[in-house]
Image 1 (cartoon, rainbow, N blue to C red):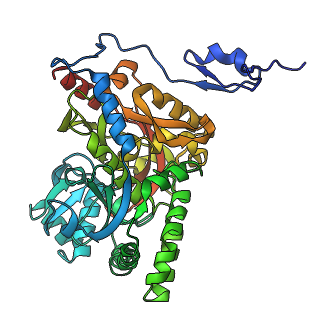
Image 2 (image 1 turned 45 degrees about the horizontal axis):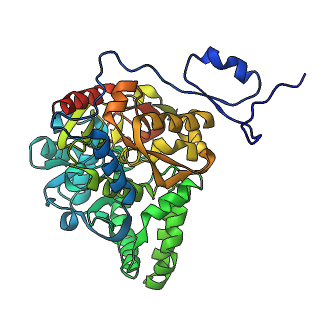
Image 3 (image 1 turned 90 degrees about the vertical axis):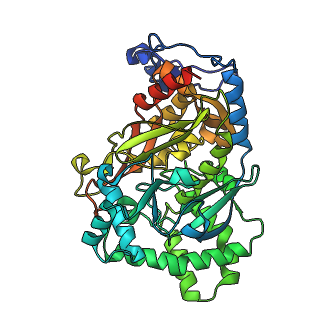
Length: 467
């Protein structure tokens, strides 16, 4: 007997969203109708529905203004430079790191490994023992990337001599910075140490950086990174853990300028090969693009939207528009995911990196519906990817009309995490991320997904109530 199909008014098949128990939709599933189970729960008991601050500011109006500013942002890759020369406030003895502030004593293994490796790369320390002694002895000043308009993937360590991309938000004039992406495995950003790590970094400093920088100097309009993100979302990327299409688009945008400015064909070939073989290369552009778009939304009185969400491998922290200088932190979570051969969850460091700036800016894990193939890398199913995005609409203030998702009929991505909605619904932001080994020196061991913890959102909500 043929099963009954459920169609809309135009006769097209529909997808049913179930917000109750899974068993409630079983009869629908029995009719071969797609069902998305929404992880929903009633508002937490005793949580106030805040509409106006104590100072009398309309919160929704403030949030609308923040969403408007983020959507209006236009991050463009305008140039490159050496970290200590271009990043505001940085100096020759300052090392930046991912996430909220953390001391050496509380740093996780990957961050310690990245700091020690960077000291050796810089020539400040001759070996790991000396590097550890210097880092523990207070000879280096540590500061979060986010305190300097910068972002760093995983450990996020930026040392003084590292080349960085410079992105400018052409709509507002603010700039953001990020290093070049090394790739996966035993790399500094995952806490990897060793001769091959330092050799790669030196090649990136002495060959990759000059080749890219020369090419950029011939592009007076720069490279529109927002446009590349928008295109990549239509090509199967979400621009956090899947950047295959975006990296290809970037290489295409660079191509003619690279050829015209080439001083050595072998160097040019190696640069093209390096980018082509590193699908994550674009991550270090999507991240500062997110940062550049979000910064104009900071400091709006009465705005309850998250403008920073970042992890240092020990803590996760968020910052809220109305309280732009204050971190609200909780212990970093454990990632559930897929591991490289020979590694498992017992080897994993807690969640780490500034890359959640992508989710905060309305793509990344919030746009997983655009990138069903990402589940082959981080775990889960294509249906989970779609369900994740649908769920994130429940905790956001708007939709990004510049970033759209084909499978959702080109609906804009969820934009503007609202601490009120997170606390009221109990729905936590979904993150997809890489996984670093918990010991210094090993590097990346996999990738996966997890939820941000409620504790930092509740702390922010309680503070917001007093404004």
